[in-house]
Length: 501
Ligand code: CO
Image (cartoon, rainbow, N blue to C red; front, side, top):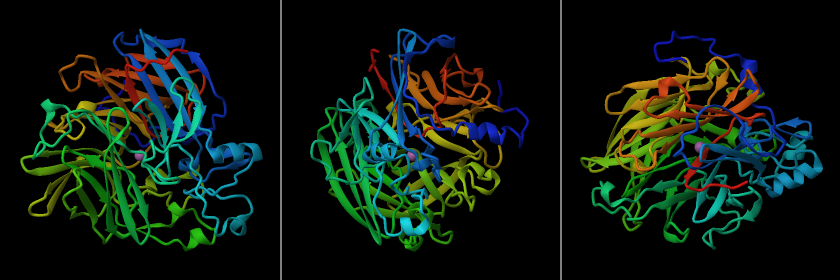
């Protein structure tokens, strides 16, 4: 067990160990997990759905970046102290065609090219909807999400692909629907908005972006049954790389990163689209604040330049708007490495958690760093999304300074600054931690933190269950899979949804 008092180590991991978590997993499994250390809590009941790249190569060609890997869904269903595992690839059009051909037929957004050099790639601007970023159960549907196109619907029991889903006619074919929906818990007792406009019932809120010289953001709110409750569209100037957003009872908030897009290398076939993004350190990051009711105009506030993929949470209090976000000093690309497996961590900026205080009246902002240690994938108690909250859970590097792979889970107390950490270094590697409240709980941190980790010692993955009130004590249950799941991206735990094998 490691705690915050552990000495710093620049050798908290071995590069070959880290790389071994990026092997393709071509197999599809379904079984009851039998190798369990510790005890699964009896009242933990539901299904953890996760998404991420399952294939890191197609035929004998490696992807240029894991973000180009085909989406593979993992479900771990937990009930009465037992757990059932299943994984399955999303049968996207691209996956089916490429598996039949045994080679890449599409260019990846993050630099994967078709065989044959620039000539074979120039002016091929087709997007492969790889459905690899997130998976969420809402309105009776399980949806695999990828931000530049429509979702794929899956059977929650078998993870079988049912086809593209247009959300009952809300989306047009090919229309973007982000991989970062937010669920507003919509509880009356949690009404803290300045005008108390929170919906009474939970809502799924999401957006889609169309970008170029200027950009269009479309916002959607869905009720519990998956019916569209509200939608509105806004134009903003400039190119917009918007991966995530945050919500409060009154607002949706985006950070427009200070980046520009030079499409030439993409058009002529030498680079992927995302490799043509350039960070402009002299431009501010712009907060875009959109009222959720869609009737009032949007506001913008300039912030210090930084690059943000993920927001932890936002809330309104004392007439101010607060945002907690993982910020990079610049766009964290591979810094010239030909291959992501050769990436030099010391050359790539680490994510740090910052709090932004926005004054909507004065249009001013203040920022302070809350977590300096390299971090990514924030989560919190789902009942506090968009509301004041005290506890944040996040994947962190083992060492306190500089960049490194995520190897630990950190709990940060936003009221006291106190931190509790459990690290799986040197041979364990962390994914996104997901907080699950204990049924009937009253304390915000009463519940569990679930994380699908990779153990390089066994070359297999493990689902770790930690008691959120005693993170430093390490997992109370370790569910050992007899194979690995490549490092994933995002997922969700659906409480009460149990999949019977
Ligand atoms: Co994300």
